[in-house]
Amino acid sequence: MNFPLHPALVHFPIAFLYGALILHAIQLWRPHWMCRIIGLWLLGMSAVISIVASIAGEREMIRAGQIGYSTEIIEIMNRHEFMGNIVVWGSITLFIIWITLFFRNMEDRRVDILAFSFLALLVCAVSFTAYLGGQLVWVHGVGTP
Image (cartoon, rainbow, N blue to C red; front, side, top):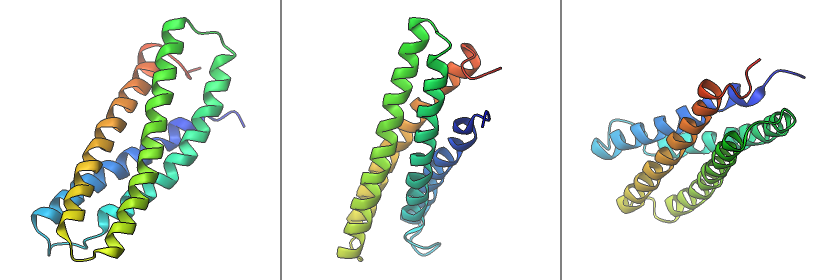
């Protein structure tokens, strides 16, 4: 299969993380407007799809390594991979901790506020990762025919 799967998949975890942050912020602002765990489930979907996107990214990096890019591009690729790993493992960890704390303390609003702050950090990390990926594709032409 010669279709680059990584670019097709990465937009879903990004959108789910942004959606989780925005909808969780709305839920904190107006608690009775929507379900309290909408951000939690969006984060879970983001974590699952980000695992698949990360595996596809590894395959794309192997394919790109055969081309022989300059050291500057390889450095950006390594930084993009590192930040992507932070997003993947951060999403998985936050999801597990959030769901555990939620079921232990269902009525505690502090869990929601703590989750919101970590969601904000994850959104910052995924934004920087997406910026690096955009630099690789649009500036340096990595992965383009």
